[in-house]
Amino acid sequence: MTGLLALASILLVTYWTLWFSDRGLVASDHTSEYINFEQSFPLADTYLAAVALLAAIQLWRRRQITIIWLAVIGGASMYLCAMDVLYDLQHGIYSKPTGGDTEFAINLATAALSIGVLRVCPRTRWWAGVMTT
Image 1 (tube, helix red, strand yellow):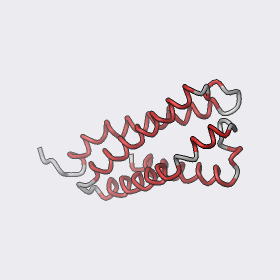
Image 2 (cartoon, helix red, strand yellow):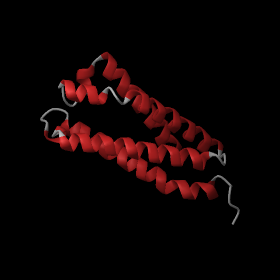
Image 3 (cartoon, one colour):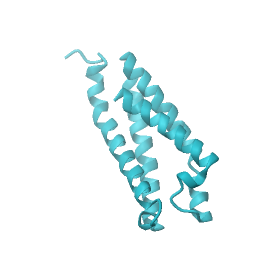
Image 4 (cartoon, one colour):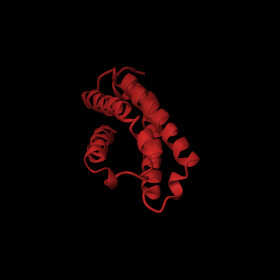
């Protein structure tokens, strides 16, 4: 889980670096509506990357605060994923010949990671040494 959280942070930073340097590499559509929608995510994704990194560090250190950071990252990433999925469904992004598959894969991976983190979260109380029985 520690590695996945660190990887999530790296992937978010990589995505936005590519978005701002060569958008064509990561954009699933090139309409102004899509670009405006995506442009609303950098701050939220920066928050997500920071929290994922914090969660990874606290999990690696086996700190009790880990459970809080895992709950935050799981909930926040699921929320952002739901917003992205709804937009993609409403605007036919998944059916685009270029980028639709990539967008679907990103959404699927985000949902899987979110659910995985939220499933691990309650177990972390014991794993981090918070619960003794």
